[in-house]
Length: 42
Image (cartoon, rainbow, N blue to C red; front, side, top):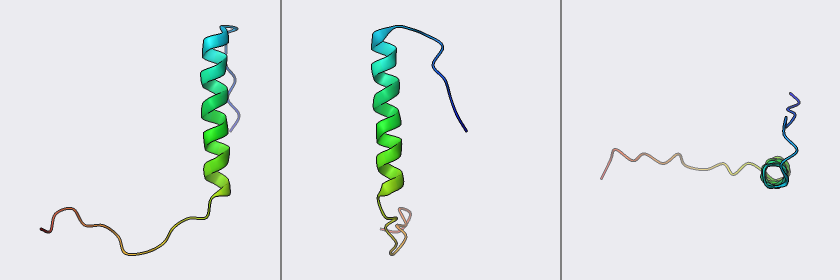
């Protein structure tokens, strides 16, 4: 999916680029597998 920012506001553009960078960084990190956390048990 490709999303496009429909504004030329520099502040919005900076925020959009920040989120895109974070998403790309998350894709590169390995998925951590382990015990699932169960918050219902004390």
